[in-house]
Image (cartoon, rainbow over all chains, first blue to last red; front, side, top):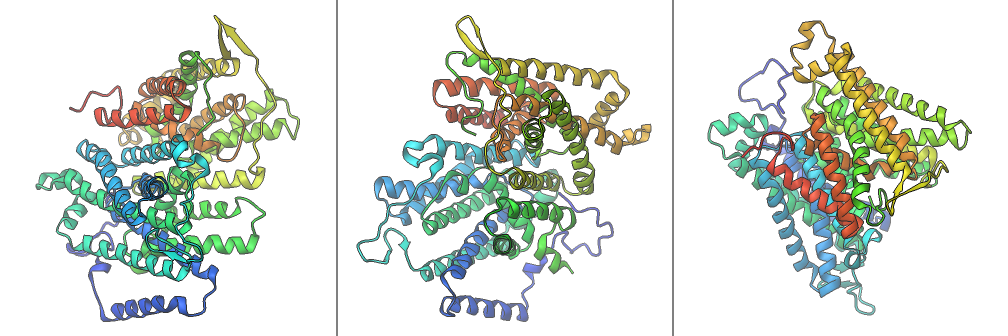
Length: 343
Length: 291
């Protein structure tokens, strides 16, 4: 996973990936950040319609999930199994709520813990036995398919392929229930999604500053060399995998509670796992806001195509999506934002 | 993945054996391409889907005889395989390996969506019902038996081709040492192209066998695509014999597991077994244990 094709290395300090962008805080950048944040905080009060606000919320949730994936994806650990973690998060809250009346707040904790546990069970042997590259991608792909099939097979509890709806926790006439994590007002969801998205970006930054960050970079460049200078390869990789899995599970929780409907195909399995990977890559997985740009791009694309061609032609939007992905990977492997920032 | 490859009653084991032959054919093309070009075609099952639609389109709306539609599908998918390599894989061959995996994932979406646009989401079938066979109180599907025989013949033919023709030997040589072959005067790009075409032709052949047993719809690739990758990985990517053995192991798990519990559980057990095997023998079942 090295970029040795860029033959003349200008200076030894220059990282081969544009991660330096994040590490260089500038006054202008901070100003832009504060302006954007201020704008986002005021967004629900600017007279936006229900539907545009819905789109913004969905964009934030996917941005957060793509970011969670890229936390490990950018380090050369391309997982095709994040559908599993999203599915575990989503189904944990819904099943605990419907079956036992456990508040989704607690359910979220259970879902995240369960995902972290699964990540550990699958990650430890993978990293211990040096399953990397294609093999890692396909082992994790198996994990996401297993999760989808288990959900389908447990149809007596999960509703199988038809999906499941969390029972309404709203009393008569009430528009929200904090205990049930159900809010009819989209403004509340907007602020929750915004907070979670910012949390994801913050975790990314903290991970960048963590001492093991450099170790992980070294591992992604050359695992043997990293091991030879005493880096505990398996343990370090496992840590970031568990982190990424936990974050993704939280995204699944958010998705389930916002949509109030989940089915095995929208939260787990190969299709959603590939979508996560592509979203993050299209935006640029090596820069912090790349996955966010990817999520906004994909949403803008599908909305534009929907408006332009309408719903009567099935598959046209996916055709354009697929074609764009191919072009992206061939011509712009660093993604939209990654390419822009490099210039 | 539900309802495809479904298993009848006590014939689970025999059916599993027959299913194994089909899996072996499915995994052979993918394995060959991986072994030679070092690329996993995530979209391999979608090529098969295109082949199935080709047969349906030629036979049902156009009224072409199946004896012509089958070879046409094989040729078309072989050309698509070569085209896939030339136009999509070749530009990213020098990039990070994961990009090659991802670009074929893009092709997966593209082919699936194109099939939806062109053929719609309805289930199609070619309207051929092969008779069942009763052997010793067991009901066996003759389509499945045919698939088993044809698959084994195709595997044998591919093996013969790789051993006894010049191009076949060059293909095997490239898979053993990618760096040295250009020095021996072999053009790797040509070998890659030929291998991709062979892989495509095997996908087209698989389409002919599958179309006799299953309805066609745009997402059909997802029903056996992941399974095919798992078989290849369990056998050791690029290891043709390992893939062959793994096919029969997987088929037994699905067939017998599905019979004892429920179809999805057959798959779940097979997948769980796969994950366990990855830890025991990450390089494939026939590789020496790493412990």
